[in-house]
Image (cartoon, rainbow, N blue to C red; front, top):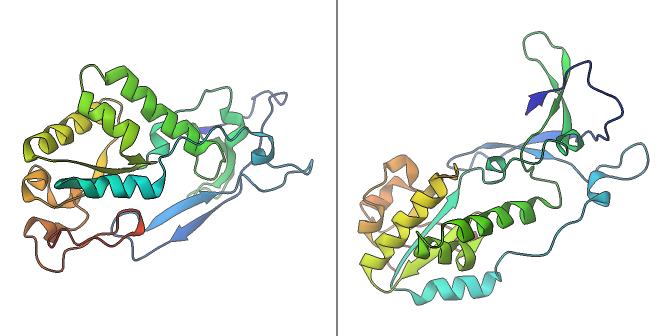
Length: 232
């Protein structure tokens, strides 16, 4: 986000988003997230979400995605860290994502503009997924396995991909990492049903460090479905 200067023109169309924290101590990584309420009615009786186009649905059918994932012998799952926050919005639209934030030192309340796609704004899923699809188009000739994953094996920020042989699975993993990293999309919370797929990652990049030893209790919940990688 960026600080809004006091001499900023008042003629610019703008909107303030209320925000509050959500704390989930059960989360292994981000235990605190901020929720922005773009559905809050403003002084004219409308909210930001009331006047925005949502955009067409781009995410895969959830049931088909999981069934397709189950076909492969070697599978892996991960997600993009703070996916929305890696996508910058056009600067002329950022005044529509203003917030008030109190400086912890001076206690002064300041105006800021959020400069990236924001969770709670109704078009955020479309903007983020469309960015991934554009990345698939831009990199598909160099990384064909990665492009296929971005088009067919994603549910918003979740990756559910695999292959029928370990060599292809490893190649798909590496292509995906290289292409996403080039645009600052970082993959974390890795799980897989074969240790070779996870060997290149430090423990903190795994959904559970125990997955490296494949203990009996190792399990994760891709898209809310409990999956025991050791027994699969």
